[in-house]
Length: 407
View 1 (cartoon, helix red, strand yellow):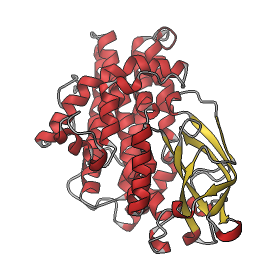
View 2 (tube, one colour):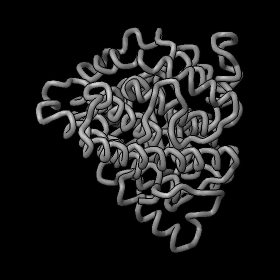
View 3 (cartoon, one colour):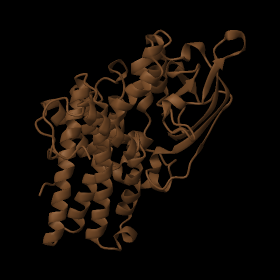
View 4 (tube, helix red, strand yellow):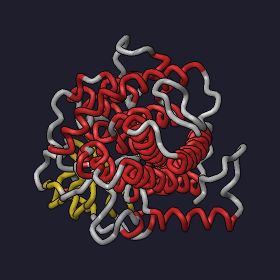
């Protein structure tokens, strides 16, 4: 039976270098600070006061910024450098999610928009974005999903048309299920400027611009992410806020969305595994002497968590080395989300039928983890991708692989 002792290396990770090991230990130490504010965010998603004072949130903020915008001396540079890799980010996110993923999602930062900026922005656009969010400590949003269309980027109906007089652009349309959309101050929106796959563009949007409106959607769990709807009615977009205008049409728009999603998706898997491990550890604290049958069930689940964690780290390391296998990335996300749900079901079973009524943390986590199924693509979409990868022979195309991550 494998288990997680906070501060001890997580099962399935394998050998990591000194910087990643130090990052893991640091994040394990500060994750417990997330529990209380995570419960508060579940009661009131606007209750973000004091988040910035948490060491884990302060570190998370800096880790997401380019080196030039990181405050010197606040944290060891080797920890920030380690967290700036994809493998480092999954270590950081899994450990902090063991505390509470709501805090990660509610905290200010570049989120997915930052990945689009890295992929598409000119130097001037990147400077504008990073200087603004660091100066104002802002939340951001990533506007891709639309009502009735989901995240099918090729079917976008949000439009970008030339403004009268040729000075910039006008944005019209709606977005739905956007994290932090009603709280953010700036974000990236994908819209259609012309027919066809190369007619999609990404633009920077200031939520204070005329014609922009947003509101919260009702959610059952993971309320810290503040899922929102957005509406654009002739929202003016500066000419220099069309991202990637210096690139060819084939290298901007949809390409930026895909690059951002592929690099961000392992973090969703890490978030789910952090919650799965937390639910298992919660059972160990609440009921340390399980009957033999319960021990076997818990041991089986922990072993499967370790297997998916192993593959998640391999996928993350591959991305750091320039190998992006979308099929394996999706498979890891699917399995991690499924294990998070299984962990809460097992916890409720082993702790008794009243646990989801009397145990406030378990009840909240039970609701929270159901959101991972819908984040960064549903299970059916990723299973289709896995099938396509297996059919083409490209699913297993790097290194050694752990059993159990393909679904």
